[in-house]
Length: 66
Image (cartoon, rainbow, N blue to C red; front, top):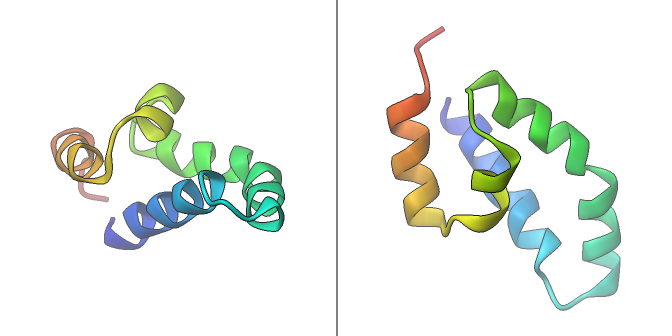
């Protein structure tokens, strides 16, 4: 679960980075990040619009142990 959260946070950071190359890479991986989030019942809105602290809190409340 922690690895999935870190992957989501990493790609989110890349998506909003100043570098155009980082943004292009993040845009290409957008669907795989959403697939990871969907596995834990987290919507695309929450992935892209919550800050990292709120995302961690939301991730902790919605995820279920595998």
